[in-house]
Image (tube, rainbow, N blue to C red; front, side):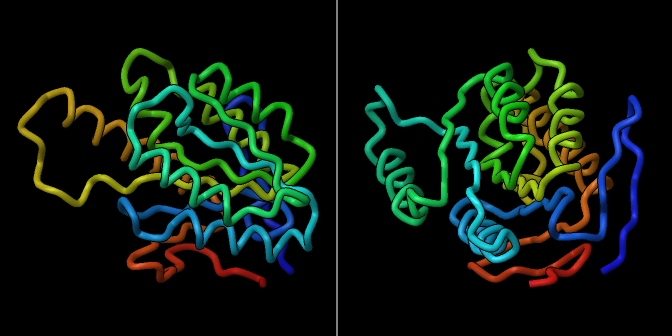
Length: 196
């Protein structure tokens, strides 16, 4: 197995060609199967070690029945004896969860939903640096929504969201050992290849 390092801003380093460490980015559209692909991948490469699942969607107190069912389906896929779920709704809580999870495998699902809550009011650079730092002891699988394949939005705020999330994805992809595009439940490895 090759070992290659990539320097991140402020002296952080990410291992880029090992599945035991490093950042792995899973992108796809809504209901593409990206979460399932990321869950299967991280379960395989971690050899049943405990996995921290950082969930950015929360159904507590929400009247949205469809969202509650989607979150329930996600929960049922994760065995309780292996997966430890941490639900976060704010950027500060996301950074804190990443700090607490630095010792082992982490699946962050999903970055797009977290960003949608705070697209321009928050400086995302510290979050990206925390992701890079957490990936050093990883692996860290980040699941996010690929939203840039539609028509250019007429609404300026929606256009800004799509542009900013696209820039975040590009930054993460440049640091990642692997980038996976998921379409109809099928994984296309854009960068890197799974060892497992």
